[in-house]
Amino acid sequence: MQQKEFLNTVMPFKDKLFRLAKRLLVSTDEAEDATQEVLLKLWKNKSKIEQYNNVEAFAVTMTKNYCLDRLKSKQAGNLKLVHSNYTDESVSLQGRIETRDSLGWMSKIISKLPEQQRMVLQLRDIEQYEFNEIEEMLSMKATAVRVTLSRARKAVRDELTKTHSYGISK
Amino acid sequence: MESVNRIEKLLEKYLEATTTLAEENELKEYFASDDVAPHLQHYSMMFNYFSVAKEERSTREIPVKPGKNRYYLAWASIAAVAVLAFGVYFGSEEPSSPYEKLFAQGYTEEEIESAQMAISLFTNNFKKGVEGASYLEEFEKSTNRFILNN
Image 1 (cartoon, rainbow over the protein chains, first blue to last red):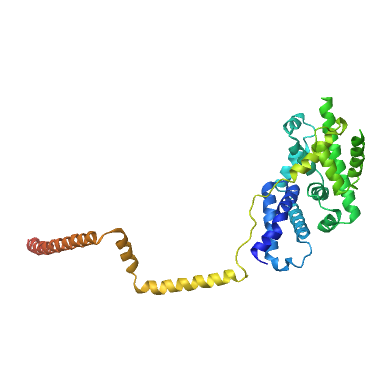
Image 2 (image 1 turned 135 degrees about the vertical axis):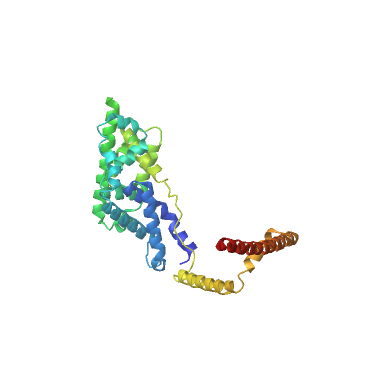
């Protein structure tokens, strides 16, 4: 497989890998690193690429594994610090005012979900993959995907309802 | 009202994760519009976020190196060593040539000639000085003789 061919294969889903990595790792820099690493691995194994029937799904799986490894090995590192920024803002009104921009608020809500839920939500609601694709990417059973997705969506809904009613009572 | 009912039903299905992609897109479209029912308002943040989040792009280049085979680097290093050996071998044969080249670039022939003349003048005078110094040596010999004799 030549360079150009490889780029044509990889280009359409490069950003999807990046967004999944960012959903898991939170930091943009680390997400860029993860994407680069995964693409590099793909490039090195380009001779085998033709054997995979779905390169995109394979790349998503690689990204998932890479990010989960990163999270495991960095558990005591700065990632935890990033997360701790998000855990206690439910109390402070100040924090709520500061995060009035809804996009930041939403990504914070999602970042509080367990990793599995974050991935499923990302792949379905943002990237709009079909369920069977998600099953393949995350090597999960069909029912497991639906249950996880349902939990993630409800958790986000609950969080939003809470904020919303706060806004009214104030 | 009809549409709100339908949206509510879809939302219910959505939360159970039983909607199809088409139905989810319908929800996205509804919440992107301006007339969202007040009691559903808080969902719009969610669905609008999904649309915006899909726009985020990675800014780094794809890390692909040119070159077909894996031995590219090995061949490159062999070639580099060969070039280096060649350079060392022929470089030692005529070491002055790079300097000559440097001179030729910066100065005209006249300038070089006059510089050479200046240098030869200087050496001639220097020789005279050295000859003069030999007289001094003679002088020192005779003074030493006087001192020793005393």
